[in-house]
Image (spheres, rainbow over the protein chains, first blue to last red):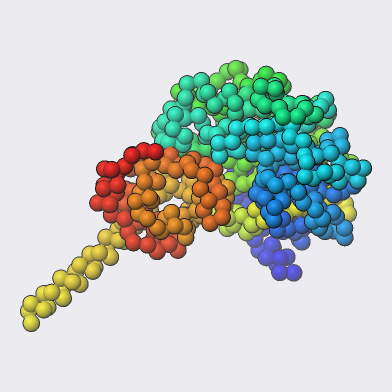
Length: 423
Length: 135
């Protein structure tokens, strides 16, 4: 009751910054009360099925509705939690893995998990329980972790390969990271071992960089990624660079810097280059721009040396989860479209922070179809909590249940949300 | 009688002057903060979870002045734990700020966001800068 009345006061205000910030969405989102503090489209409902789990990063749901949660920091000696659902709640029934990290994925009878340096897998039994939680197979070892952009997100294709993000340990490959006016390192040597996606064999032990394929270059940092089953292709969400105004105020206003560069959805193929740190994508001009560290001035554009994004979103919203929906529970328009969990911004200050929502980008015949729209909002809490960045919850991981329900993890208060349609 | 009145007035003047200086330094420091620090440490000094450390109720801000001044001069890229949390973004050197700007902004930070700690003076910054060696 308390939450209901609070929401009716807060939500009209909460919507305003989202409208100013983003392209207006075509569908209007009426306020639906009592959805665990979230607004969702008509016919959908949201429930918080777990909370206080820890820093809940990516999640995976088994065919029998159990949930594996990867924690960023080990809690009570456990870096992976197993949750069992009953009566609309998910209870922790087990835990293992003495390492923090982000990646969590289930494929062909194995649970895959990543620390900030390694990738592991655990064989599952016919109930999708980990058979030997203390002895995972380490399949990838010793990836770079130099603090910045340290998480290693993972996803698998249908041909026995695992794809791993290695984020760049830098904002824009400056000689001095994040120092005002510092220019870019020639050729950006970081790119030999970070700032891209690597492909490894899912069943081979102890692979290092040299054993894998340097699949894609020029991606600053990817947290949300998914294998598009319809196109049989890897899609990733890049976290765009920070601090255009702080570092090059002569070219960028505070406002320009708050909305640029775009957070980009890319469709990848082996060998392509997305252009970081040499370029960024301007979501208003719809152009690839030369980065100021490499001779850009906010006006100079780049031609077709680097791939174009599939969809460009407003800057700094921090896409941490990507999921192509293949379920049958949601209405037809959601089929094969992309859900993206935006963790929420920090680099818009002093302008109000934004994001902290899950958006939906419709797809048709493998291409984006129409504008993206806010699907689930309200994770941050009040309008003030959102604007200040002091969010109560931040969406991070996405997973689809066997019945087509959508699960969202929150890495601030350790909640798991379950979003369903027509129930 | 006259002498003691004079002394009183002098002391009063000194106190007023000191308060004025602190207020002015905080006001000037806020300007520096809003131009240089706010994007990472945020308007409320609370930083950003996992990325940029908070400036609130931490020994790094309230404790040793020399260490604090050095962080501004040299930047900070250690794997430090602050109140049980870790932060991954690199802080660059801010040695382009003047002694006065550094004194003001640190005085602002030490007297904002519920912090309460003595001011940092230009003279203190000057001394630290003179002997500073970049790591």
